[in-house]
Image (cartoon, rainbow over all chains, first blue to last red; front, side):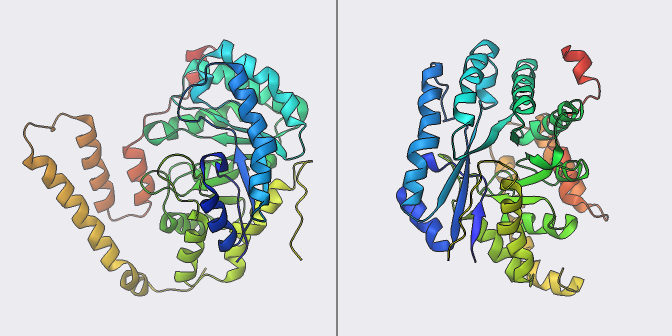
Length: 270
Length: 83
């Protein structure tokens, strides 16, 4: 079955992974800008990283028949330094106009601090002014519930945001209901030890239905599986779910969400 | 959604659930066998809260287990932060 991984950090993956994704049926990937595992020393490092996501990674993916799209932003971990974050935000418009960029992401909260919130408010304001789609990272582990509620509070407080063009990512059992009830897209990330497993993701689809749910690998430089979406497909099949339902979650839903970006120009294979 | 009976689902899940419960039990035994005490460690208390959630007769066990490991949320956070 063809699928789209709406959140994967291709810059951290090898060509073997790209080949495995292609062989498994992946047609499109969405790559949000994120924390590279270390804090960058200056805005030029971000500039080069944004070039990588908009110039080099699309070519690497295309070699395997995969269409590559990106999201631009400053991640929550490096958003703590508000003055530095402002410098990074200032270069975003140059990249938001590039042809493979879907919007602003992944941005959000990490430790739910006041400084992170200040940076996030600037990013939300930029998105609203430019009518950009948004992809939100929600915090890890103990901080997730609090941080997700704080992000939803911020969005609720800005009437300019079109909720159908916003994805709140890394949802789990204690946060997905509030995200879907709010009218947002809910991303579910499959990780080996944190976030969700294929079985728990199938549970959430059974409980809440397939509407506005995006399943992703968020595969990066840490423990993660670039073939997590096919693992979810397998879990659903094992339970006897119809192919049409599975296809809706792993293919139709990300297409619908990405299609709201002016730059998304998916070329369906013949 | 496929119409499976509770017995059919239990048939499918029994060995996996049994395996994970044994992993949990053995992991906690490992902590007990080690030197020192963790009774006052908040993480140990969270684990016991999560076990209570799992052992309860009602649904939403996964959600309540997640909440056992979560920081509290304050409705007034924006006022407290001044944003």
